[in-house]
Image 1 (spheres, one colour):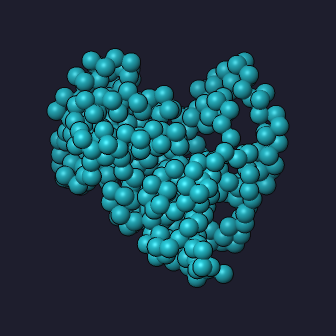
Image 2 (cartoon, one colour):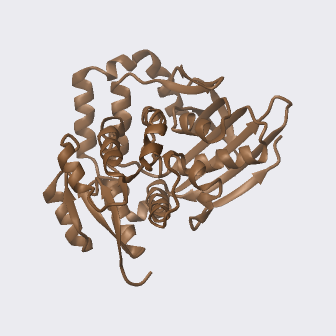
Length: 359
C-alpha cells in the first residue's frame, strides 16, 4: 500500500520477536500503530526504526496502563506468557473501553477471558484472544467443519507447523512445563486432563500419513466456544523420536520442574536467536487437517495450508485489527470465527482450504 495511515491501534510488547515483526508488517501495509512495552530503550529504538509513535507502561501499574490506552481503540497484546500478562491488560481495556486482541495459545487464558463475557459485553468491549497462528486457522477450520456438519459431536484437529520457534514461544512452553501442565482434551463439554502425548494418530496433511499425538493446543478451549462440539482432540505432528521423548517425559517430567533445571533452560532460551530469520520464515508453512463426526456415523474432513506461523500471526492479527478499526466488533468474549466467520482465514493471501471425502 502507498502512504501511511495513522491508526488509534496499539501493539504492546513491540520489542518482542512477534511484536516487532507485526509492527514491521503493519508499516508495510500502510498502518501506523502506536508501539508500546515496558522497556523504553528497546521500544523507542524500534519505534524510531519504523517512524512510529510509542508509549511506555508496565503491567503492574494500572495508572500507567490507563494513560497508555488514552485515545486507543484496540490493543494487540504480544507480550507473553499470557497466563501472567493477559489479566492486567484486559482489566485496563475494560476500564478504558478499548477492544482487546492477543496472540496467546494458552488454554487457561482462553477460559479466563471466556468467563468475562458478560463483563466485557456490558463495557461494549470485544475480548478476542488467539488472533495469530494459534488459533485463527484451526478455529476457522473447526467452524467450517461444523458448518458442513451441524450435527457434529466429535472434532479432531491436526497441525503440522514447518518452521523455527521464537524465544517467546519456547519460554511459554517452558513455563507450562514448570507449572506441571500435561495434556488436555475436551470430553462431554469439559476440559479433561490427560498424559502428555496421550493418543497417537496417523494424519495425512497432503503428502501421506504423518505421526501425530494429542497436545493441549488452544482449540481444546476455543473450538468448543466456537462450535459447541462437546468432544475435541487436537493433534500435532512430530518426528517419532520426539514422540518417544514426550512419552518418556510423563515419568521424568518432575525433574524438568526443579528450580535449577528450569533456570538453566531459561538461560539457554534467552541466549538463542530471537526467532526465525526472514529467509527461514519464507520457507516455512502451516498444514492443518480436521474431521468432524456425529453420532449417526456421518463425517466431514478438510485440510488447510497457510503461510509460516509467525508470518501468519502478524497477518491475521493485523487483519482483525483492521476489522475492529472499521467498527466490525462483537462485544464480549469472542473467538476468531465467532466474530468473523469460518472464512476469515481465507482473507489471508496464500491460504488454501480443501474439503475432503472421508474414508
